[in-house]
Amino acid sequence: MSDLQAAFRELEAIYSDLQAELDTLRPKCELSGRCCRFTSFGHQLFVTRLELRYVMERAGPPPPGADGVCPWLKDGLCSVRDHRMLGCRIFFCDESYKEAMGPLYEKYHRRVKELHARHGVAYEYGELTPLVARSP
Image: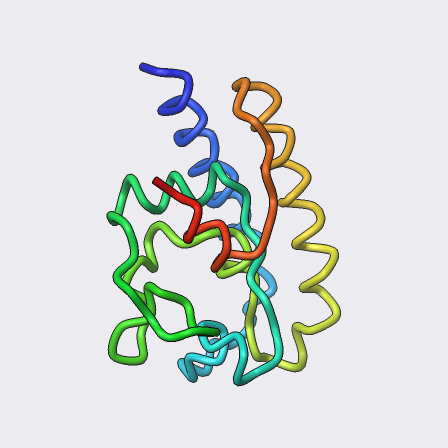
């Protein structure tokens, strides 16, 4: 198994650990699509290059999309849900979960960052849209 594939397997384990924690917190998803329409709702999605490579390897490159909207949003739903990035997995519109979101993101982002170092993958962290534009 290549170092990159090993890193992907470890990334999946991190995502699984996060899901277990989310299962105990039980934030409510309203299926509003706000998480994917960045400009309209005043937020940004930051990802690592490794996360982006993972989703693109599993789901293919994103189709062209509208500015300020996740390129994988299709017919109001996430077309890469099983492979989505950390920020997507943590973001919920549920007000009762709002205080938990930041600390949870920091905890799991730290693990993703450490993963880069362990597997010799250059760490690059930035806003989704520009990273997608620079991807091969």
